Image (cartoon, rainbow, N blue to C red; front, side, top):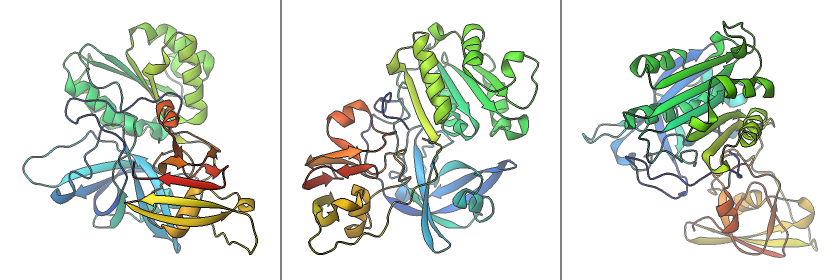
Length: 386
């Protein structure tokens, strides 16, 4: 998944769900209903949502959830985009949530998910978050394009389904890059979707290690190839909204090329499924020595105020300090990508190391990613509730 700050818009007033602000994420324990293989190294995991939690897991296409479990004695959290369009039931029966998990080399959680998750297993699932949903409020006659690499297809599956089902005149084009056909997640699902909407869904598979009939669809998706595709297969002037999801390098490439060919910034939405860095541990032990200079951090969460002293020399993140007095402080990726740890600075100031999640208007209103924020004032007050 997914999540940059510079080009993200607020969630839409889509056809079914109303426009919604970010809400504080909370964990509930859900049961695994099904685990379906997608490729040799990826699975789709479906959770049952009981009727009493239906409102908590109501979501927009393109949003994500965080999964939490304990592996080798350590709490592990990972965020995954929801790959199915929202399901709304009125008969009181359980709804479902589905995510796709692709095994990362050396990835503790993703490796365990291939073998350790099975029907009947219960795991903590955070309520849906994310703003990779804009531009879907009025779909009539709209042309939406998604560009994805590898597991970046996950949120675009839900988006494509939504675009095609909510309007009889909308179109969706997918540019999907993988190493080979065997690596294509949701290959059969995409083919089924194409059968249902043959004139309104266009699929372009780019394979870096497999020869395609069309040379432009063979090899790595670099700048020359992308420009060729935009000049021959996809006309940017005919596209209303762009959704990008993949690694940082691909997202940056697409944003730069699209801007260069005249696509307005406000019509480009994007999420990252990785920044290329190793997963970050959210909490680390910090002690305060006598006489050591500290920053006083006040944390407001669920209507309760807690205070902690943070040593200046420790360069501790606000989230790390908050977790020492409030273990329930919200977070998921701890790498500045998902935005789950968002809070508003009420007093004092911080500097952020990275920001892949907050939108410009959120920054202007004083919101920060606490996992990436370091105090630059003697006293700091942050509020998770506003």
